[in-house]
Image (cartoon, rainbow, N blue to C red; front, top):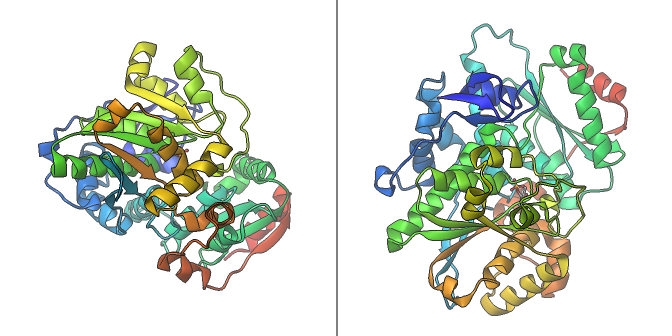
Length: 436
Ligand SMILES: *Cc1c(COP(=O)(O)O)cnc(C)c1O
């Protein structure tokens, strides 16, 4: 399969699209077509087996075609269960995406990308042996998933930049507890300063070439494809249990999680309908109401990993569904404000004894708001993070401590190391040069 830029130009194969991340014209890579499956085409049971079947057409003819099954086994080796919500009056299940090493769904994409990049580098015999350096600015969550996923990978180093004093203690721990190929830089500045340093580093041709700088951000196809796979797996598990397709409710911000679900649906998976839950950043529901695409500044909310005013993946969604009538027929969206997030966490804890993270709570709010007639059909809500990652928000709402999962406790027990830098590219440049 070939991939091309949403802005028109440039055809490239899968490995090229993933190693490059973003097209030269600034667009995002998309497949030239989506393959189509029936539910019976899938023989596998586990996430990793279903992912290998779903992604086979994308990998066909690429240099990594023979490695796909191994990449899926390597990356998708943690539980990702579809759990019926006990006590719910209507058929309602939770797709728990938060059992990976850093307890949020970003582990799925980051681990797949890491497993793939490591193998792509090993294939390249002209390689001079210098490591690739992934530069990553984070406002909290993405950096942890990327650091965890690339920890110990051969031929790749990761430099994570985060704003001093502006992330939670647990988030900082998840950035700073890794091995020699991962370094955490605490920047005396804001997240925007961190992003600006990363951008300037990429534009500095000498620096970029000498350290083989690359990105691992959420618009990389290598993160989107495995996300389509967990929606596919959730849809198939539901279908095999009940022979009825479920509607999917997907908390989203940058539209990574949301677009991946639409892709799975368009590939023929039994997903009856797609409802995107967003926080107070309303550009997606506003588009569906008005037909006008108006990206804007992001607002800060309790569901901070979804604080996106101009979702990057909108470019891919509009490329797939350029006709407004089709777009409206394919997705609907519900915006949820902070007071509603708090109330939902409290209500579902009382009703079901389940604790949601603020992002997941937007999904359950969107579900509750549906007409009762629509709730007769089964629904799946994607749970995007473990609430223990957002303990400072969740614990005051439910009035008790959130139990911490073993995998997260294990990370939190590790020693940490970080380097503090002023918000200057030159300081980072010195550190990269000294890093051997
Ligand atoms: C990143 C993130 C989201 C939103 O993901 P998108 O890719 O923007 O759809 C939702 N919840 C959590 C916990 C996240 O980390």
